[in-house]
Length: 457
Image (tube, rainbow, N blue to C red; front, side, top):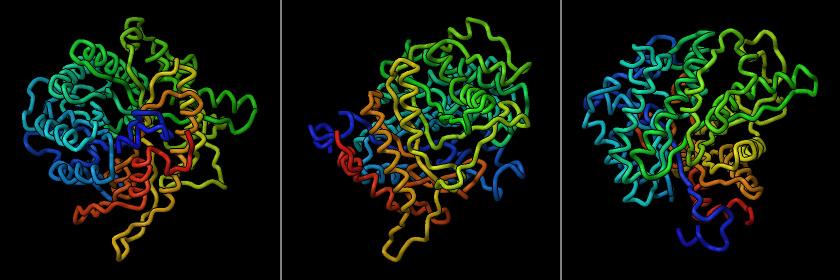
């Protein structure tokens, strides 16, 4: 495999990492096992009415007990890298102070097993699940959480950095602030006009402080992961163009401008009005730390029109009636991935980029008698988006790797188990794993270093 990847016939950059991604609460199960503390997501899902069908992550994919099987599955598919997250509450049950040795040992064993199977780990420190004990103290609204996060990060750096070469601090801070503090559809379930900017700012401060701590303790590479959704105006009218700028500032530039440029977009005050605070210069300096790469999660685009009824952005999406849409209602638009990667590269000085999540939820038919699960729409989605990645690389974007979302069908947050993103089917009753056609397709892409896509260097 390595010889293919580094050959003169490579269609992607030499050393390009092919991998898959998951997150702790979505696959691990056993949320309170072996001394783990309660997380805000455990509490959220056990609150009636929060999650579709009353589903919880109590079992999920049972990865906490079946991790050896899952690592072997990754090896069979030829994965070169695996992005996973740490359950903060599993390592520090109260969120700070006492370390739970059993929880720490779980991730220690997982990293060793990955390396033994030739799979490079990428560790995400925070993928939305916060220790409930810290949520009780205000969670991301409490400025002290920056220090709590750094203490937790140092525990992980000191334990795993001798074997983990790629770290990410926060996954999708926009989703935490928007879903958790504005709309209340994700943990902790708040609905507030004033809380989202505060939560977002403290998430970014925690990121910056963790990067500072890593420079003291670590010796490899660290970055942040953001979900980006390119915004296109529904028309060239002044209102739609202004709405597009607000939407882009709120979802995209709100998180990357502070990290790379040390400032928030000017449109943020227009978006939030009196709910937008004035932040001290020392906070912005803390956020603006040199990072080694940025992780981009991409699923879809948004076509934007002005809508004065929709606070805070005053925008709504213009449906694209003749496009293919996923089970989550997202338009399939691979050109948006090329566009957003080129935008990040141009605006922020051509940083190294990993596509840390990309995938789609589609209906999967029952398993055929020969054990095959056909998912042609997902195969088409992956093929088109991988070609879009290749196009961005050919146009000068410094791309370092691609992680499909997700390895396994899993607990999809407020959707429960109703949406399947995995390239591997999970029978939740038996926990049997069955690679779908999309897994076999992706394995061919990996084995040929992209040549199976029909692209050329």
